[in-house]
Length: 313
Length: 246
Ligand SMILES: Cc1cc2nc3c(=O)[nH]c(=O)nc-3n(C[C@H](O)[C@H](O)[C@H](O)COP(=O)(O)OP(=O)(O)OC[C@H]3O[C@@H](n4cnc5c(N)ncnc54)[C@H](O)[C@@H]3O)c2cc1C
Image 1 (tube, protein in one colour):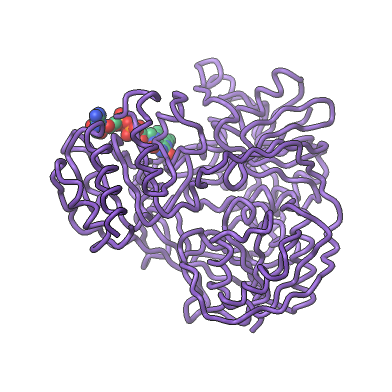
Image 2: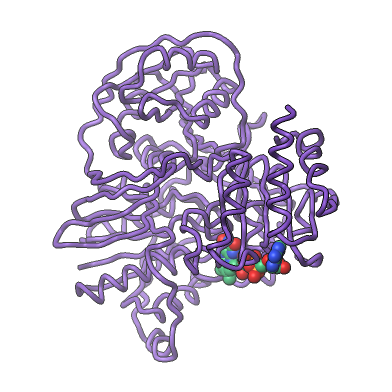
């Protein structure tokens, strides 16, 4: 069975979640990747290492305009005859997959966290991570949007053949005026390690100890909702039921009480460390490791311990 | 300007999540429904702000049964002019989007706003699907929206940053945090909402492409391991050797 996988490759770089979707696709069938832009052939060929057998690349447009990408993927589906199409459920997948679902009349499973079971049902996160649902697709074609960080890339060896492809993507109706990407920061939804802090940190001037630990670990920073509401931290760092839902390997929460709405966005994390002065803080019930202590002392101490560990390993 | 805001209900954020009928149905007993926060706090309020500064109307649309009327009245209390309910049970995003698109097609809306996602199904699908049905541009996860003449100027989240974009009306926008501040309905709004039009229209009954066959709850967590706040070397060792995350 042929599986079509869309990946975004900007500035010649392929992100980790692109490798995740290729690995995922390989578990279902023979993977053809479709992408666009100017990423060089050698990089695209190297996707074979993760299981892609062929890469179709449309050199006619850059970027990820949802209408253009929808037309491109629809065209690639037609030419490959693929009946399963896979996206990462990142910000691009969330804009493109719904459009494509309508265009191809293909049932969309958004937020998948596992491969289809024996009956073809696919597990997804629902209720902001408080439960899972199993989705059945009734249409002949299906689109699966995989939750980032729910599948690790696996190298299987091999190189992919690269073919130029005319996706007839047309023009973009949404024009981009400016793009801002802070240098050096790790996008939160993709981060494997996250250091997060809440109102217990008392003020924005105290975030240095959070950022230093994050830098030492190579982690992204996050915060609770009140912290972003009062403007101590930017909105995109707000995690929880009404913020970003994340599932990193490690989530360190300092000075966050662990309200149900906060937990909803982070309880998919593989390991949770909670630092709180109040031993009764509800967050300890959801934690793997708990430290009753003052974040102002514990965070710098943890940073030192990480430094020591890195020097020794 | 004619603005349409898509409103969905969602279980209150403190609801206990449980399932019945052999884990095939969400247990609604004792569950309080609220207006989905993204629809209410960001899409609806920004729609109202635009109406207040530029003139026009704000209509809400909901796919649902009479049991949704209470949440619809809440949206009217916050300030929408009128509401439409497409009279059928909401089953999946594809069906909901097809119903809304079928209704909106002939209405000439300049802006169609949705919340970023619902907090129960987190699909983030309906806006893009409506846009494709109507062949309109769609700006997802917008954190700012302004309208100047027939041009919408927006800021949106992208992977690792943000982008300023423009599109010509009509346009479909999914609204995320930053777009507006939550508004609490006042007594006058609540009174007025009782008499504002809530038009019930017949469903167009598109096919259903997906469905939930069952639900599961996550396995309970093992008990937390407490660590001496003086001994962060132990924590690092556990994260490395036991949890294997660093
Ligand atoms: C509809 C709705 C949606 C919501 N959505 C979200 C959401 O998406 N995300 C979210 O986060 N919240 C959300 N909330 C808010 C949520 O209910 C909580 O109010 C919020 O998470 C609390 O944030 P906090 O833990 O930072 O602050 P607090 O509850 O004030 O907790 C601060 C914690 O810091 C501890 N502390 C104080 N000093 C120190 C110190 N020196 N060292 C260590 N610990 C210290 C305290 O013991 C306390 O536990 C939502 C609420 C509603 C009603």
